[in-house]
Length: 302
Image (tube, rainbow, N blue to C red; front, top):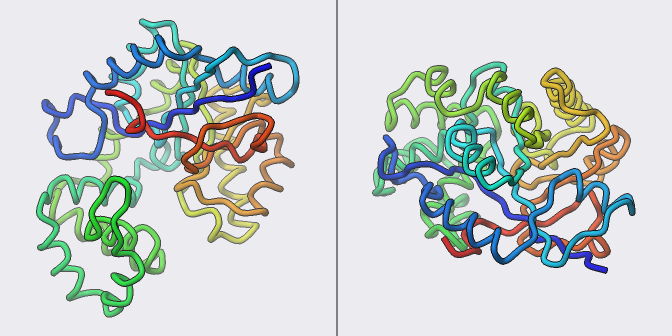
């Protein structure tokens, strides 16, 4: 009996060369097509609902099972991903932060992505931040370490503006930098960057799975219980308004951040699967259904 699932995590998938921001850290559509061909050839693709059924003992996973997941609800997923999945008779799970659709706000994490894409040399960003952040040296010591995909300077900028400073301060700095480096109206930019309700309903009608990614896309492990309840309840309510079946609710924790309170609340609200950012192959015998690890798109041929 097979119990392993290779869960692949995607974010931006777009025509990078033809886009306004070719330096965004994303997967080019041509690479995505090649990767889908590779995954379809080497793995047996399964649906989110089949993974839910496997955990319930109602479905046996095929050998080399694989599931595709897409975070943040980008319009890329409607424009580029959906046609490729439909053409290959594949499905994916798409996780959408509510405020991007309902309030037309740009997530702070995305402001940072486009600030960096519009400023290939981070030196000016570092100088600007050093003038405004009194804890600069302390924060660089904490976050200025290279990662799998970024040099130390970029990891520092992301860490500082995503979690290092208090929410109000980092949001203000990210918005100021976005205006300075990108120079676009945030609501207009949001409407271009993310899917809208009509597109999400079309995705559902095409057989795609839509799951929770919170309301504000906050770090849930930093929130109080009541704040986490709000994030889950508002997101679940939004999913129901789209027509998502209540018996197959799933959640992808923003930034992969969660704690015991998160798990207790998700279980109480009937969430069937929870997706993390832990880099590992998933196994239904080894991993709890609310703590599924995933592999990054960069871990596969493109």
